[in-house]
Length: 581
Image (cartoon, rainbow, N blue to C red; front, top):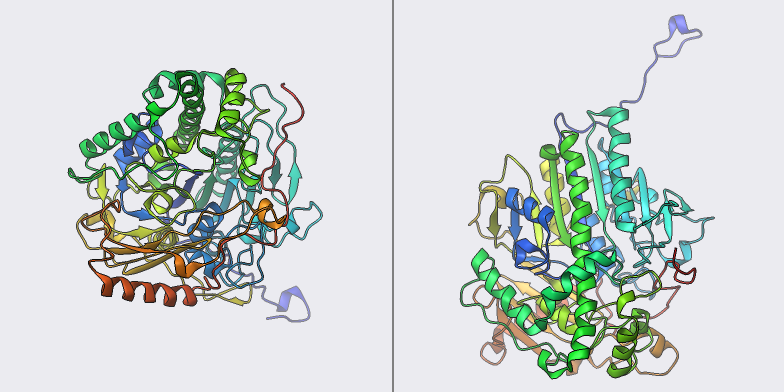
């Protein structure tokens, strides 16, 4: 009521949005290009005690899926919708003029940050963003697709898909910033420092208010930058080569109960030669490239451990839904033998003997800031043990991710394993259910697309309950697949050609999708796609292919394209030209 004076008026104040009493925090930890078997608790020889602890106190999911590329999975994870439906059918580096390929998130698909922010949560993020179109990279704006405009109160990290870990390009909130000037600086350590600081700042403001924290490591994506001691310790571990590594990991996975005792290794991936085919000096070069990758995985786990310890010291860890996953399978982007300069993936690698000569020449410099070093495809194959193919493919090696969920109090069997089919789109619905939040029908005046995902909370207390998912389509640059009730149909398209070569007329894109052969697998009995049943079940396959087209149309995955178009800016960022420091 408003009268003429304060004396005859009654003030009113808007009620702030509040989370439900006792609502938990939510932490998403996203690795970049981590293979399905690259964590110790998933069968690796790499030391990952933090991930192993989270798994021992939580759950491991062996039938969890993602898209086979980074930005699309981030869109799925953060919005709870399929990636084409958000506009992120490929990467924000490219805009292709179709609804599913805008290269930016539609405002009709709000992020969990936007949902949580409007329901009483503080929202914090650090690390790799890679959801902003290149034409918004200027420090003068527009900022419509920067993290703060997509639901984060604070954000610190790199906006693009990869960066120099020693000299990254950095943003904080709505501006570009410089890295701290300190000896031994590393991006992974920096973002963990910032995450811990953000949570402390939040608690100093209102310790009763819950928070959502998104930690998106740029590791272990190339360049595999890590201090030398981490590289050195893994050289003897991997001298046995990728064939033996794959066999040893499968044996450990069987011991851990991650895969069935009769699980077979599929044949080597296309282009991967037997380890013993290479000369000793070439094997030594490829071992050190892999050692840098493994060292980076350990290094990242070590800094994740600092975050977990900080949350525990604050008394927040056991009131936090903690999720750890990868954005896609291990990457094949290093070519047959690896390279000191992975930027060549976009322009074409030199002949294997030339690449190996460069590695041998600079062997002791692997992991240093002047190089964009990456490993050979044989190591990627081993990283995805026992799955077929790798990043960018819709076979298991591209779309299976390790998933660890820690949520004390509801997990019936800490350290347990879950086998229900789930996908990245299911994690935000899970977080909403656990926290008591809802998916809004309108955000900032924009009507919202319904969530596509299904909460997996039911699995916490019910190890054997059948999955509540029935259908999930996959598509990436012409690679296609669909899962339905335990069956999977998948079509491999020609690998993505270098966009630079195609756009400059040096190579032609392959677009004859009708020539692709569809395969059929019964994943309930053939978990890693070894036995193709396409010729034995033609009617089932035909029905699933037709279902794929229906799902593709419903989710804006059409039209199909086999090459990236409309490149808007650089793919790799960071500073490589300033010399050692």
